[in-house]
Figure 1 (cartoon, rainbow, N blue to C red):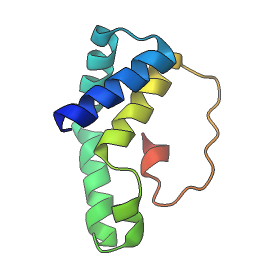
Figure 2 (cartoon, one colour; figure 1 turned 90 degrees about the vertical axis):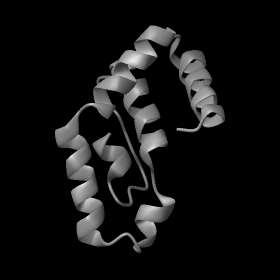
Figure 3 (tube, rainbow, N blue to C red; figure 1 turned 180 degrees about the vertical axis):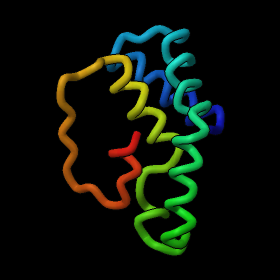
Length: 92
């Protein structure tokens, strides 16, 4: 993440969830260091071809990480997602 985007994402998460900077960093490290998960996402991207529109306009690493942190911090019983495209946000 570039610095401006990273700051905006951190501010958004903190305001929404009241998570501390330490919590946000720990959760971000969890998903970033989950190599099995990251490799699986990359494998899916490669198998479907990077030219497919869903991969370009869908959820990228930054938004996926934000979604993961929010769900990890809030621990909801249920999450409802509508408008699923490539499944990246669902995976996170």
